[in-house]
Length: 326
Image (cartoon, rainbow, N blue to C red; front, side, top):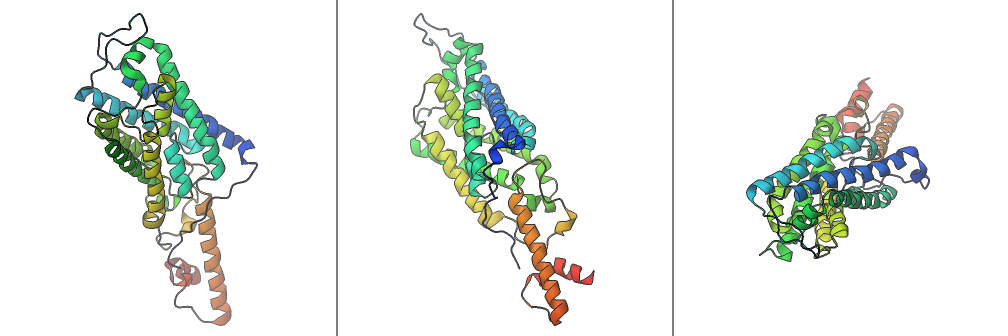
């Protein structure tokens, strides 16, 4: 047996939504999205260095300037916010905080459909409340800044923005898939430890690149929350289609091309089966490793009974040879 990857989804139980750990995961996705949008969009709103004010009709009489220093501050805010929020939320839900990430993990067979169905509304609700709290703090700054809503910059095209969102979300999703791969974590134990940092750095870089083009989304919940509160739905579909396309492509690409395939890299008995930092995402891996060990055991029994060794089977791996020597 040369490959252990199987395209099978973690088993979903109908009663899963009533389990305490599932409920905690949904609540933490809501809370994490709220805090993420409050701090990141708050930076967009309150970093306006302008003397503008509201007219009698409640309209903004000035707009924010977007210079290099402000782009850097906003990008850093989004990167450090997602880094800290994943650190906070991951032990409870995996720390998605992004509908595109949830869909990508679903396509990559890392989570159940039930988790996706419950997590995405929680993320959207949390993002909306987070942006609403930013507006409640200062309606003047909120109006002058445009509410932190995503919008195409002058000269940017829909095709260019779509490409930007798709490519950047693809990169984000690849990093997330690697960070949550329990098979790879056996080979590189530092992967789960550095996961939030790697994700945060990519989000930081993505915002440096995309803010001057379309404000940078790579997270439909971020755009949705800002759109609901600001009532600005211009090209809203773009910030769903682009990130979702990138996440879906990444989920398929990683599962086919990048997923660890050599079962004899490590002894599965020497490493924990699940990633403790990403609950609910180790079910498929656990089943695959268990099936592998059972197949090796059955092959060893056949050898003992028949006295012959198949040339092309799981018994040719170092794991099987080790078990026979033992």
